Amino acid sequence: MNYKNEPYPQNLSDLLNLVDDVAKAILLQFNSSHCKKVGELYRTVNGKITRDKKEFDKLGYSPNEVKEFKGLYIFGEEKDGCIIPVYVGISRTVFRRLRQHAWGKNHNECSLAYLKTKAKWKLEGKEATRATITNEDMDTAKTVIQNYKVVLYSIPEDYDLYFLEVILAGKFKTKWNSFRTH
Image (cartoon, rainbow, N blue to C red; front, side, top):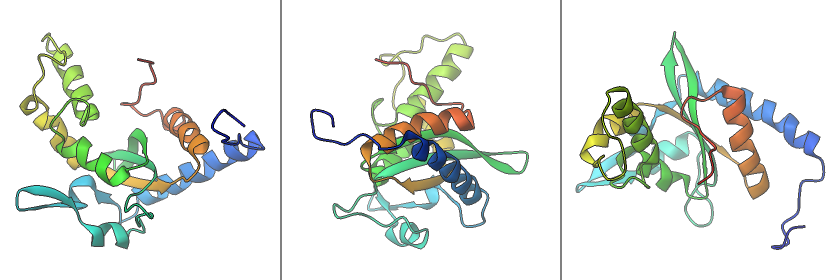
């Protein structure tokens, strides 16, 4: 147990075996005809982006007791007729986190859009910092994220969730994950 009385997994081999099962399930979902783009799961109501509850429910992404979804979210893009994972994220509030990635106003909300914009600017030889990149500068990247396919995978245990984020990013060799510490 750690200081919060959270148990460590009894058998790490079981967790490693889970990785393969989760990875297979994610790839199957990505390449099914039912997989949705991020932008297909939200709608604009009175100028506000809201979750389309029916779409999430149809996909089996039902909210928990606090009306959220805890687990993995994986973005994928089409390459050569297949959807490949490009980013693995985790959150206790996945519904909110997806909205932030695709429509957020601040660098810390739409961190993937910021990262994509920063990478593009560096290639163009522009100064790319939080001070120089504006919300409007990230609009192109946010549109790309809205068009990514997305798969959610419920993982209730925190240890498993953190572990799976790192190992799946490595297994899928996702382009946009980085685990550099702050």
